[in-house]
Amino acid sequence: MPTAMRSKGFIALALLPALLLFLIFVIIPVFWSAYYGFFSWKGFGDAKFIGLDNYKEMFRDPIFWRALRNNLILVVSSIVGQVPVALVLAIVLFKNSLFSRFVRSAVFMPMVLSTVVVGLIWGYIYHPQFGVANHVLDLLGLHSWTRAWLSDPKVNMLAISIPINWANIGPYLVIFVAALQNISPEIHDAAKIDGSAGWNKLIHVTLPIIWGTVVVTIVLCISGSLKAFDHVIVMTGGGPARSTELLATYMYNSTFSVYRYGYGSAVSTMIMIVSAVLIALNYLATRRKSS
Image (tube, rainbow, N blue to C red; front, top):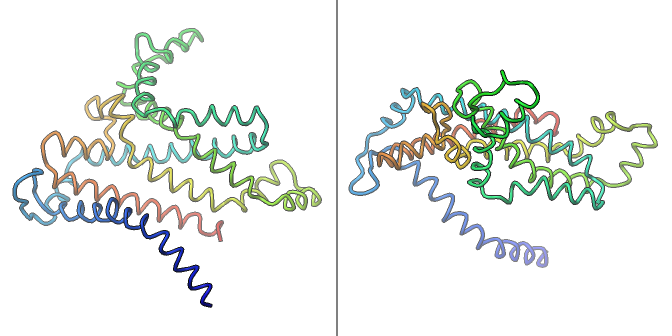
């Protein structure tokens, strides 16, 4: 018992610096921001308490609802476009060969690039006059499909979601490869003896074992999509006519452009609430399979 207590004490002591940093730079600012959401404050001078007025104004603003809708589109796009693709690639590239390591590095490379660089690259790809996307469609004889991808409200959110998904598949690929490598070889041998292979093995053996990892990656997709900012700011700035506005860009434009830090704090608090609700729904939806 004394040895166990000393071990637990050492672990707690080792974690203490990281916990203190997390408390100072994450937890306290979160509550501080939520506190200022009840005030009218320009970032300097005295803050005037206005109760729920910031939230009432937010809910009456159609731009907020448009930003929320766009973020939900991005959440669905990220879950559908990142998790399954990363899982399939992880299964295909599971073996630790030279080719697999090369492809993994290539898929992970966009994550290493600056989001500003990614936004600029895809901005040029989507350019209506000399962009690669329209040029390829012209070569394929699909001229009727060409368009101003980032200016057309019918497709601009889809156009934005593609580079975001492209840039974020890499980390999930690494996570899934690690999860697959942690499956005991005896399980694969038992499945082979039972005649389970291919799709049947994936559904009934592999996925149940790594289901907890799948749930975590979906949570990361949700949180990452709700704080998406850089790509949109670089490619569209939230336009045209704020058709690509996201909650993060809405918060930025409502805070720093007009010096309404109290209102911006309320928006940031709402982003956290939406994120918590979606993550809770994800756990409820996946609880039966993970249990």
